[in-house]
Length: 564
Image (cartoon, rainbow, N blue to C red; front, side, top):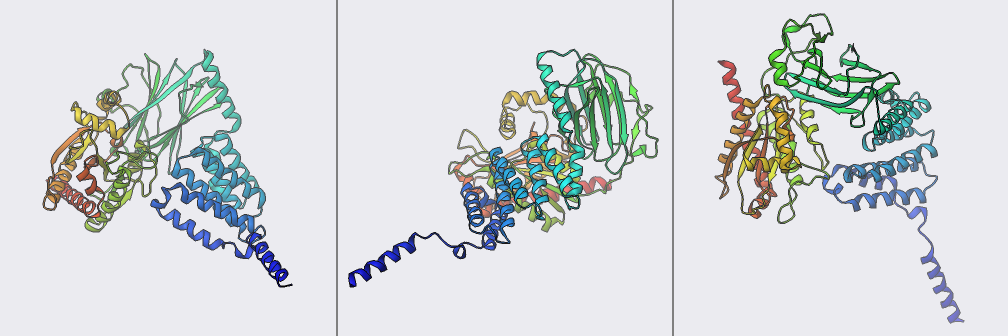
């Protein structure tokens, strides 16, 4: 009978191995949450999709094994947030849709949870910002407001609902766009353009025929200037929102308000004087927004000026009459000196920038350098420093200077690593915004802009207007001080430090900045020797220290000018 006993013992052992893990053997929620927090804090870990996928599987396994556990709703929420984070890291709309699906699954399964309102709001944010599905976003915000009237997200949801067009208006807008693809005899808003400088913003509405515009001003801490274009439809090329964020204007929003009018809203960030002008050949409405310190105390007035044909910035600056009535909102003065510096790490997210011979990415080098520069500026100069990005995420070039304008920065420094088809090319150079016929400068601008040389040429037409008031002189002085300090600071420690000098170029990342701004090419990542330097902590620290010295020298010149 011994053989039978052994057989039974072996059979029991095999059956035990076949039994799936029990609930008691599963991972704890706190352990998975801890790893989630570690992933969120590490830009390095976020670069690998496997890290996100592995965490999602662990949350899913926990939910399946612990259906009645008190922490399961939190696991539901963090699983959705992990998909949300992955969609941002990978810049994937497919992942964003999955995140929304899981946010809504939480709301359906746990309608009484204190996380349900957060899930709805985050679903609305993804639909609005990532998928540009305003109809879905409106529905999620509306559900939050109706289902959770006492939620701490209630006020934020109401703000978003107020800014979004109602679904019926979206349908009308879509129908209007479809009609335009066939034929349209109605007046049409065809395009929205703008120019921006430190003391003005010009918004131009291109129309296919003259229209009646009714201007209105909503006063408050954040005033809004809006006007209705009567019996006008929105053309297919018009974006619902044009972001400006230059310290004076936040954005321009457009929607088909109803069948009788299109509404254009200019959200103001700072105050000044505003004028409405109508021009012919072609038909357009021009709104000038000017910062004029001496105009405080005037009564608000809006007046349509006479028609003309030239809407260039240069023309306006030369022809605006000081006696013309204006709409004025008092502005606040700003202290002199350097108080806030915005440091921009070039590229990021889906835009890796240049790639070195050993696969070192420009976006990673610039982020590390930006963080070291920020730390140095705070420590050595005692100024406040903000980064356009502190993780590996993609930011539009225009949004970088828009951010600097919005926070009222005194300087803007964009950090990059150069590249050249000739892998022997090396050296340091610093750029400031200007028109340039220099072929090499145009090539660098095209690469950093992510465009072509032809696009750089087209950009010059816009720059002719911007040159009138842009802080070119201050930017060139800052560029010179930074370039000199980098060469002087690096030569004692490294061989073959080539001074390529200060250059001028039409860089998108510098467009629209209302403060002195420069673009620093810290070395050539396409050169093996300089790629190795760029990837080393010692070189990054010395570049950061040298730039800080350049800023210090520039600040000294400001003080000298102020004392004259």
